[in-house]
Image (cartoon, rainbow, N blue to C red; front, side, top):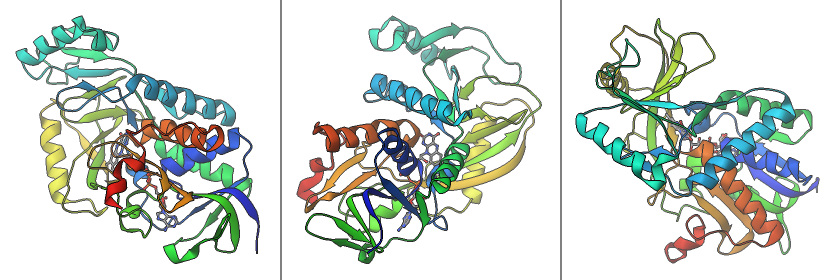
Amino acid sequence: MGKNYDFIIIGQGIAGSVLSWRLIEKNIKFLVINDSSKINSSNSALGLYNPITGKKFVETWNSNEIINETENFYTSIEKKLNKKFLYKKNIYRPFSSKKDSNDWELKRESKTYKKYIEKLNYQSKYKFLKDSIGGVTTNRSGYLDVKKFLFLTKKYLQNKSLYIENNIKSKNIKSRKDHIEIINKKTKYLILCRGFYENESEFFSWLPFNLVKGENINIKIHHEIKEIIQKSLLIIPTKKPNEYSVGSTYDWENLNNKVSEKGIKNLKKKIENILKCKYEIIEKQAGIRPATKNRRPFVGFHPNNNKIGIINGLGSKGISLAPYCTKVLIDNIQNHKNINREINIKRYISLY
Ligand SMILES: Cc1cc2nc3c(=O)[nH]c(=O)nc-3n(C[C@H](O)[C@H](O)[C@H](O)COP(=O)(O)OP(=O)(O)OC[C@H]3O[C@@H](n4cnc5c(N)ncnc54)[C@H](O)[C@@H]3O)c2cc1C
């Protein structure tokens, strides 16, 4: 038998990467096993975190705690690695109608929303945007350079011999009396962070996933936008001058990571609704969000095995939910704190 670990994590997307850093912080002995030939949805994410989302611009669940955790977590890893990957940026949301602007006026008076509203503008802010009646600027948002964060995490783990490449199938996982055995290694806890692949696994396929494909593109325009723009799609600055990530689409039927004509057409239509200027598409990508039926993550332990855990169902909010969910899981194991019902997989025990 090979080495003994306290934790083995399967998957190095955003969930597995953030969990690794949590274990490093606590000096816990662990190993990450990842199959990088598989689709990694985190690599196609735009990286946005944002407390006000959806068509109706509502405050997201538990947003205060989740945004605080997001910013504190990634900033602390930036300091540790002496690298930059988290960018705090306001969002400028052009009004789509007079009614939209009136709704934001009302939001400014509400206790819930006024803390997020930086400014209401009643005239165009950018000459190359279709924002003739103005827009609202909101705060407590930003984006993570996800590819960079994942790359640096992998490099760090590899340098410390905490990462191996392997495709872990259910038959590789053997439950013993007081530990889990997996490809010749022993661990006290096995945490599955396999993203949308978990939908077909032996252990957790009973959970109500609602997978959704997403596509986005990178474009070049001859103008500088310092903040994030949101109007039926997102335009997020990248590190490269005049280059922006733009997305995303939602497709519940064609669950693959192939860029489609339909997806690109959809994005172009939305871009024309916001940009007045010419743009050039320079990159296209697609991925599958591990979304859930009730839009809350899946955190907890298998009903028949309290050593096999899961962090999944991060949907379209993986960047902000991963720091929160990993903290809750570790607090549960180390400090016996309850996993709150909203995210605990126990809420679906009747489906098992
Ligand atoms: C187009 C698009 C845009 C998005 N934009 C945003 C955004 O702006 N903000 C946001 O917060 N979220 C966004 N998301 C959602 C975000 O990408 C997901 O919530 C997140 O990637 C889920 O991360 P994960 O770690 O659960 O899964 P993944 O990132 O898919 O990671 C799973 C990992 O497990 C590995 N794996 C799977 N099976 C095995 C196995 N059997 N053995 C070994 N390894 C295995 C895979 O190789 C992979 O590395 C977007 C998603 C898409 C598709």
